Length: 171
Image (cartoon, rainbow, N blue to C red; front, side):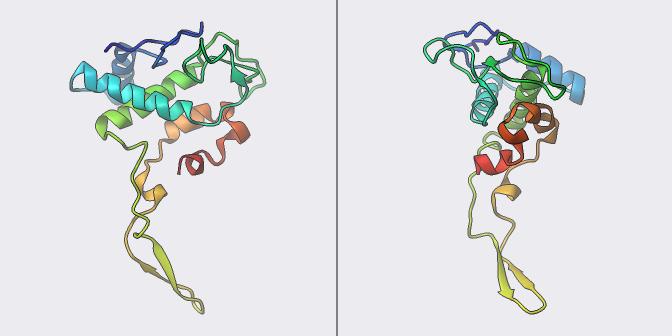
């Protein structure tokens, strides 16, 4: 099923901020290679990326009511890092860029934005004097989740509190 793109007008049923073609062009521009595989797998990766984005804690409020606007953007009462208001009918380029970054990560490794974490693989404090740790593995949320700083740096300005705990919110 083809993606329905939010264009800033509150598209009912929208499930992406940019198209598969836009995502492919972005991947070629920034990584010198296209996304391989079926259109369906690319669309699914984009939908997972948008789901991840839409569950972050954004500044402002949705421009339209719930029955009209399916995604987190467009938003009202949001300002960029220089203090300029983001128009209420705009999807900022940083949001679209983040969708591409997250979609590429999801396309390369499905589920990477929502890792399953085995908490038994943690460091354990085994001694207090001369502090010593026993490492039972590499687990934990931070080890399982990629650091997608390219995207997070761009959207941090629109996140509640500047996104200082964006990775902790998802864990």
